[in-house]
Image 1 (tube, rainbow, N blue to C red):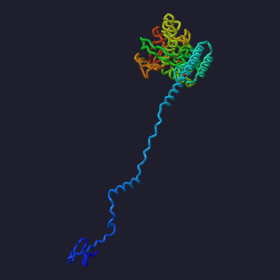
Image 2 (image 1 turned 45 degrees about the vertical axis):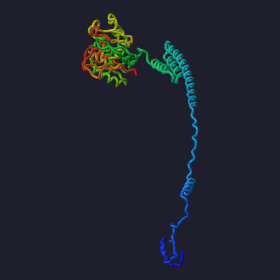
Image 3 (image 1 turned 90 degrees about the horizontal axis):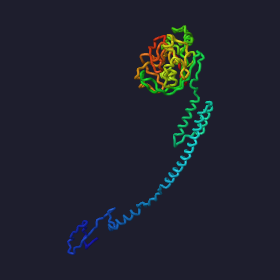
Length: 391
């Protein structure tokens, strides 16, 4: 841009006087390049609004959804519970009716058992009852008790009758079945009275004889040999008897043994009855059941000549003392003795002898009386009888 006629060129924004009164000026604008060029002016507030509007179009807010309405009700559960309750009551009524029928049938069967009929018939009736009512009642234990009783009756019907026995084919020894049970063992003057329960077992009908000993051992240790083979073997120790039993069992295939003290007393008292002697409680009658100091003439006698006790067992009082399996114990042991099938302490000062002998008076013949000897002692008053378990 030129003002006047001056050829001076001033710097950007500098103004120089050209020396003329007219004051001509020359202005030159400095050249601006690139991004530095001036842009059209835009109002700041308008630009902000435009920019915000642009972002609002690009970023959209997510739409909020309303929650679904829950479907909750206890009505179905209550209905189901009510239905179960009705079914439970219905089942209970049905089982009560079955229990009533079962009781009626059980009473009929128990009456049937009292009849004088063969055991096979009794067993058949009991089995029929069990087959008719096999299911367990979930609302009562009475049905279990009836089944248990029926099974016990079956077991009893299958057992041989008391007093029934058998004869060993190898030796000819006769044995009597003693049905088990519980009884009050002992007497206060000998040891503490206590309850004992015994399983079924067999016991010798007679004391072991000299002839039976000779058949197994090949010798006769007895002093009273002249009494004969049918007289009880005596003069044998507990250890001698153990050797005899070992050889007998090898020959016969059986498991013979000495009776326990509890078994011996139970058998002597005719199955645990309150008998003072084996077969009687009347001292004046004792001579009918036993050989002892008042009637023996100082010697043994053939077995089985006196009356037996109620089980059919002979000479459990008198003739010879009888060795049993137990070690001898003092009276305090019985306080801690097992109730079921006691076998005595594990050790002691001697082995027990029971029943008295031909040389003793009535006091020693009592079924509760106890004697003892060292297991190696041999005496002319000491003998034994055998037993064997029934199962």
